[in-house]
Image 1 (cartoon, rainbow, N blue to C red):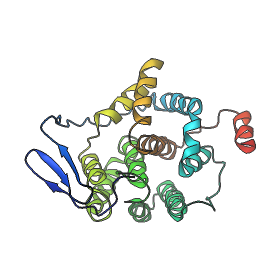
Image 2: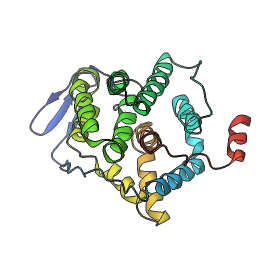
Image 3: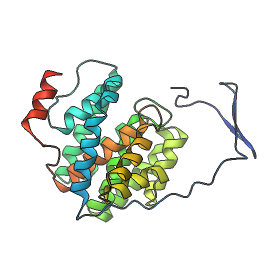
Length: 248
């Protein structure tokens, strides 16, 4: 919450200056970002998604601090209508996600693009929740969806991001249009393809602690993307889980 869309900064040779915040970020010790190529194994992706859902269940206490995450969790089980309480952006966030999923399921690509653009810059954090969700969602789409259509959509989203989103998330979305993702997110995708539970735990915890809710927003975007592009029912594990959600 420290930075907002439109904040001024100056990029020098050795530092990033934020005059309005009276802050200086030294760049001399910065490491060069070498993004990974997103990769999901079509044969094991549902199994990996189930394991990630179980991990989220074990860390569900984190969701209570963020109403939009609670809605995403409930919606993953097809159990929650659009939110009617909370900050106005949460309703627009949920409504845009619903419309985007519906459009993708019906191959209405122009509508999917319009809904995706509505998510740009929407939400909290240096990389807003809408941007993070899009990153996860279309990472799944690039592997599991129609490649030519996905590349076009992600390219259009990335082209619109600089006018709507902060620099950091616009950079991430541009990287995705080049089929590249951060090392942190790449580690999570690799863990989904590996049966070692410790590897998934380490990668998911790293995502959990990324930003205020950015890592969790990205993980939910990934799960919704897998669910949408392969029509999976991996989220329906038992009636007992639905009962617990109803009672909470």
